[in-house]
Amino acid sequence: MAFALSVPEAVWLWSGVLGYTGSAVAAWSGVTVRRNSDAIVLTLLAAGALMFAIAIAERWLHVGHGPFLNMFEILLSNLFSLGLIYALVFWRVPLVRPGALVVLPVLLILSVWLLAVPSGSGLLPPTYDTVLLWVHVGVGKVFLGFCLVATGLAGILLLKQLAVTRPVLGSLPDEALLDAMAWRIMMLAFVFHSLMLIAGAVWAQDAWGRYWDWDPLETWAFLTWLALAASLHARVTWKLPLWVGWLLIIGVFVLAFLTFFGVPFLSVAPHKGMI
Amino acid sequence: MGRPVGTGCVTVVKIASTHPERRFSMGILSTLSSVKLTVAGIIALATGILVTYKNGNAAVAWIVAPLLLLALNLLFALFMNVRFRQQGGLMTFHLCLLAIVLLAAWGQLTVFRGHVEIAQGQYFDPSTVVTDQRGLWHPWSKLQQVRFEQGDIRVQYAPKLRRGTTQSTVLMRASDGQRRAATVGDIYPLKAAGYRFYTTSNKGYALVLTWRGDDGNVQRGAVHFPSFPLNDWKQINTWVTPAGTAVGLEFHPKTTVPLDSHWSLDSRNSAGSMTVSMNDSDRVTLEAGEQITLPGGTLHYEGPRMWMGYVIFYDPTLAWLLAAALIGVLAMAWHFWTSIWSRPLTTPVIDSKEPDHGIRVVSA
Image (tube, rainbow over all chains, first blue to last red; front, top):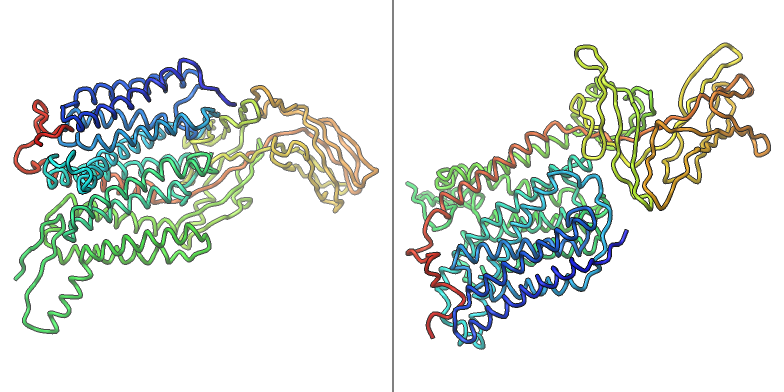
C-alpha cells in the first residue's frame, strides 16, 4: 500500500528542512562575520527537530505505524533524533558547539536526501510489534547522535588544519581540549552501540528464532562496533597524531552512516528477508 | 620489580630482568598481553567477518581464530597487567566479552534447530521433526519431554495478501494435570523443556482420512497439503493407502482468497471437498463425511483441518549470554564514568552560563 505525502505532513517536513537550513546558515555566517550566533543556531535547530517530530506524528496517524520501515521513514526519524540529540548537547555542552559547522551541513544533506526518496509506506510486520524494536532503534539513534557530535568536533579540527580555513577557524578552542571531548563522546557512543546490539539480538531471538545470523545489517553493525573498539584501543596504545584520531572518529561515523542508511537502502528493508 | 608505565586505560607492566632467557620470555608474555595485539586481533576479526560475509562458504576459522587470539590476549593481560586488574569496570567488561565468546561456543555445541508440521488435533511427535542443526552435545532426550496438542490456527492478512499476525493455539497439560490453552505466534514462541517453537509463514490444510482395510485394519491420519495461500493453485498431494495403492488427492477449499481486502485464514472456517484420483480418468470428489471404496479397503474423508509449520530452537546459553552482555555494558559505562567522564577535561572550561566555547571566533 503506497501512501503519498499528505499536505500537512509535507508542510511540517519542509518546515523542519527550513529550520535545519537556517541553523546551518546561522552557524556559518556567525563564524564568517565573527558574531556569536549560538542562540539562533540552537533555536532554529530545536524548531527544525520539533517540525520533524510533528511530521512523524502526522505520518503515524496517516499510515498507522511508526517510522521503521523504509528509507524515507528511517531518514525522517533520524533527522528528528539526530537534530534533537545535537540540540541537547549543543545546549548543555558549549565546548561541542564548533562542531555545528560540520554537523548541520550533514543534517542538511540528509534533509535533501529525504526529499528525494519515495514517501510510500508498507505494512508493519507482526515481528515489529514489540517494545524491543523501540529499545533497539532508540539506543541506536542515541549512538548515531553521539557519533555525529564527535564527528562534528573531529571534522572542524581537521578543517582548521587547512590553510584556507585558518583565518576563520584559527582561534577555535584548544585542539587538545576538543580532541579529548570528541573521544569522551565516542566512549558514550560505544556504550549505546553495545546496547543497540544487545537489544537487537534479544529482538531477533523472539522475532526470527535466532539472536545472531550475520545478515547484512548485523554484520555491518558489528563491524562498526569493532572499528570503534579498535579506535579506542589504538588511541590509548599508540601516541597517535591528533589528526589520525580525528580521521578514526570520522571513519567510524562513515561506517555507522553506511550501516544505518546504506545497508537498509540496498536491502530494501532494514533486515532484508527477515520480515 | 614492576612499574606501571603509560597514560592510557590499559598499561603494560615492564619487569626488568638481568637474565637473557627470562627477559626473552617476559618479552613474549608482554607481547601476548599487549593492547597492540588487541588491536591486531580486532582488525583480524573484522577481516575474517568480511571474508565470510563476501564468501558464505568460507571456513568458520576466519572468525574463530581471531577470537581465540583475542581471548588469549585478554587472559595474558589479566595476569600481566596490574593496572588492568585494578580497573574493575574495565576488567569486568572484558571478562564478560570472554564469557560471551565461551557461551556462544557452548551454545554451538548444545544447539538444536529443526522444523516440524503439526496438524490440528495432533500431538507433537519428536520423531517427525526434521533436524537442521544439532550440536555435538545436544541432550536429544529433552525433546522427548515436549508434549502439546495443536489447537486452532488463525492468520490475518492485509490487502494484497500481506501477512499480519499469526495466532496458533496450543494445548498443554499443566503440572496439576489440567489442560491449558496458550496462544503463540510471531514474536511469542511456545517455550517447553528449554525449546522454543516459532510459528512460520508455512501453514496450510491437512485432510483427515480414515482407512478401513478389508482385513479389518483401521487407520486414521492427516495428509498435509502445500502451504496456503501461497500455493492455493496447487492443493494436490499423493498418498499410498495401507493396501499399497497410490492415489492422487486434490483439495478444493471453500475459502476464496480476496486480494483487495482484509482477510483471515481461520482453521475454524476450514471447509472443502477432496478429489481422489487413481488415474487421469478415474476421479471422484468427496465432501466431508463421504467415503470411497478403493482396492483393499474404504477411504473415509472426515474433513479438512489446518497444519502449522514450526521452527524449533534450543540453546541453553541464551539467558547467560544476555546477562553477560548487560553486565559487560554496565561495567564499561561504570569504567568510563569513574575513570574518564567524571574527571574534568583540564582546567574548568565548561560553563553553561558562559558559553565561551561557542561557534563564534573568540579572538581574531
